[in-house]
Image (cartoon, rainbow, N blue to C red; front, top):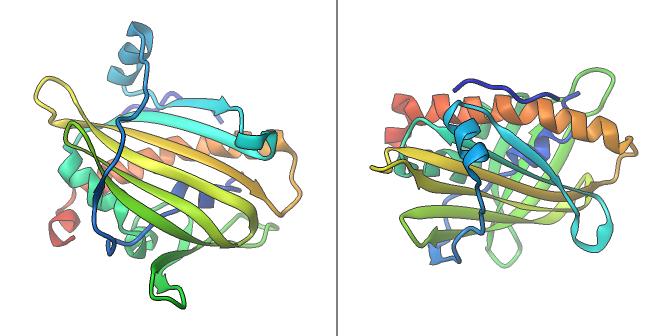
Amino acid sequence: MVVRSSGLGFLLALVATGAAADPPLRLGAPAALALDDGSQARLEAGEILVEELEPTGGSGLATRALGVVAAPPARVWPVVRDCHRFAEFMPRMKRSERRRTQDGQPTCFLVVDLPFPLADVKSEVGYVLERVPGEGFRRRWFHLSGDYHHNSGSWTALPWGAEGSRTLLVYHSEARPKRALPDFVIRSARRRQLPQTFQAIEARAQSAEVSAE
């Protein structure tokens, strides 16, 4: 994967927010992606496309990123699905574990190690796992507690190429952190951190570790 995206490490927790594999998969709606020829060519060239979106309700920040991973969805899916292993490979991920709510629903708890002098970012999210029509997968997460007023998003893995031997990986995030930082600092952090995260996911999907998922 060749990275050509520009971009502080704050809000890696948004990039890496995850979920465990306990809930059953359910059928989800197809991803609404309109890729023109130029975008497809950039993806084929290995570029990570990062787009700033209008957040729901107009509060906070929203981001979408797309990249092609050199592994099929069946191998990429467990990598982005299982939060309890994120600390093994995700950039700056200090801690990742499964937890449960009082009614027994599984959650994901993450701690991201940020550069000095910033304090660690903590978050706990619930989640939904889905099968996307066309042999794809999606994990959607939603805020429960932590260093955000709200925090939601998704990772979607879709077949890419004539034989589906690669994956179009789509990341979407909407969040408003409690910590006061300028929006431009957060956006810069995302643009720099997202390509590194896509690279880490690709390396993990290509490794022997996935076979044990």
